[in-house]
Amino acid sequence: MSEAFDQVDELGPAKIIHVYEPSHHLKAILVVDNVACGPAIGGLRMAPDVSARECARLARAMTLKNAAAGLPHGGGKSVLFGDPKMPREQKEPLIRAFACALRGNDEYIFGPDMGTDETCMAWVQDELGGRAVGLPRDIGGIPLDELGATGWGLSSAVDAAMDYVDFALDGARLVIQGFGSVGIHAARFLTRKGAVVVAVADSRGAIYNPDGLDLDRLIELKSAGHGVNEYPHGEKLERDAVVGITSDIWIPAARPDVVHAGNVGQMDTRLVVQGANIPFTTEAELALHERGVLVIPDFIANAGGVICGAMEYRHLSQQAAFDAIDEKVSTNTAEVLKRSTEQKIPPRLAAERMAGERVKRAMVTRRWSIF
Image (tube, rainbow, N blue to C red):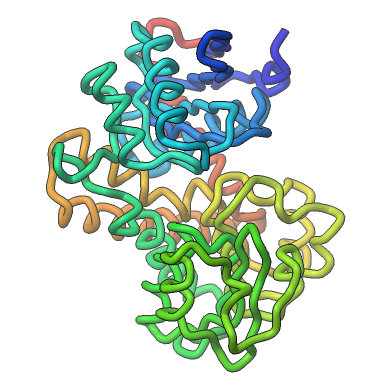
């Protein structure tokens, strides 16, 4: 039995598919969690250490994210075992082979995720047709990474959270853990509103300057293939040291479970806005809540990418997509924090109840409802 089955409950998962094709060195997993609201949208993640359990957790996050955003889509996720930095001549046939292996599973729509991008989605689209979002602009897509759809949504979540914190966004100290596409765009949008980036981390290390970092210079370094620790005007730190840097806003935008029981005590921040999926363990989130740190859950804060993908799937414009992201993320963040405050419960529990109510209302209209 799959290790993902410890995630089973009344919502799902509906389907778990393991794919193994030795001739292509292909090992991959698809989890379709729930399709009561419509066909599942979820990203294709590529990394050497993914797992069925991680895939199931991410698929559930997509179910809640899509429901919370009011999208006509359920949740799913796929993971592909491999190094995302492998040469294109190896990566392309691997992704095409995975897409071909999933022919007939029309309830799942691919999107880009960690380790994949618009070009990868073009390969999927070529193999399956009509079952991918986040496509290159040249074939009708709204390029999520280029435009920063998820980062735009994080900025909207921060705006909505300002009514629930005791500091102003102008001058707020910002730390980004995971200075890739999501982290870069979140920093870009928030610095335009007055936030000051004091520390960033990527896979190679971290850089810290309490007086602020030059965001344009950092982006230049990343674009040239360098790590953030090559930035010349700051203190070079180990990658994980960024957890303990004093800040007003802390944005995780990398892998799952980067903050856990072993390091949550080091955190010194006032607002966490989760740009990555499942970046904190449950224990870590509860510990921060008990300390009075406000944590905006992942499937509320980082929904910008999937909202943009859903708009693209319906052939709407880039402007319509970004307007929808701002409206939906702002509204949902405010509603979750209102429920959390009134009911005296953690924001994640408030968010899960809100999204779960929407999924269950959809499920009662379906013939296969299981509750």
